[in-house]
Image (cartoon, rainbow, N blue to C red; front, side, top):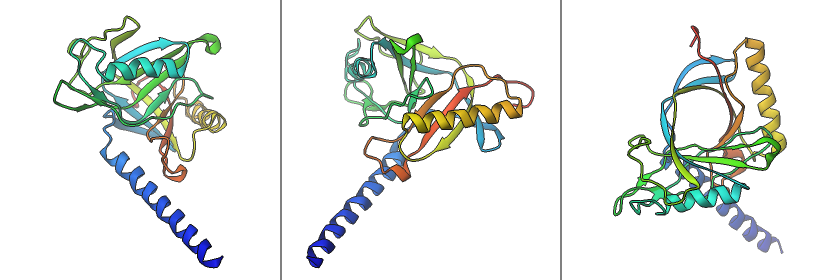
Length: 228
């Protein structure tokens, strides 16, 4: 019995170590949207993100929206190009969360071009509609990205913006995301930093990532002024 318990513990330990190594490898090899940290407000980073091309859709659910965009990445576009998704996942309303699924790749036929993170999701009034957007690599803009074959999917340009970002680990449950969002907004209000948008969630890891190694963030666009 003792020997069997030791074997089980050893197998579990090996699986845990393997999951940890894979989590770190996935994060190291995943391309993310570039940004510049321009200031700090307590533990909150103020980041300037460049103009970025995205492919987006509005659907009745997260799964429906994700499916449309995944099909675009998988070749449902005028060039038949295949794209691959990377982290993070961005969720528009506090109290909701969307985790990144397996990596996907973007690019012309015969050449893989990794998609840049994040994936952005926001909800309409009443939560009856979901807007989701996948960020494309920096070499694409709204004109050069392949055209979707579906009328429900569009390629757009997101202008340069400054985000206030707070990070946390473990599973991004609704309760945890809401709590971290509240702390973020309180920090900004105390510091007198004016908001320019609604808060959202950004996730960087695949669903199988170990909770204590997960990189999660809540963010909100802020107005730019003399300080940054």
